[in-house]
Length: 147
Image (cartoon, rainbow, N blue to C red; front, side):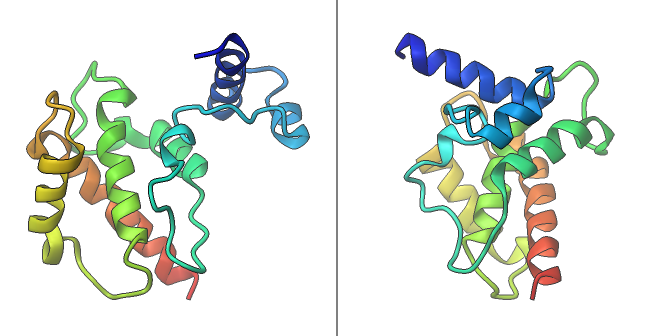
């Protein structure tokens, strides 16, 4: 990655996590525009259904602040362990638009998609299932509250 891109990535990540003293200025001025963890993977991946406005940065921030309170959290595991499941869950949920679908109704399809298309070999479906379900349910609730 080019030096400039690395600097932008670090600035955005710091702004996103609140580790930067100037995070508000960076966000408001548009200088926090690198490809950080909450935005970099979203480019070219299909994104949201038409009319939906789920903010991936806000979702990442929410889960980063709350993952340790979840019943499946294991002491000592960092956010980065759970993040792929959260991201997969919220993206899968918003991809359905306003259809009333429960996680259990499509879990088999989600498991296959994770296993055959997305898994990096380090985490299988059982590793990400609970986080994916949690983020799925939150995204569906957010969608239904916007209707």
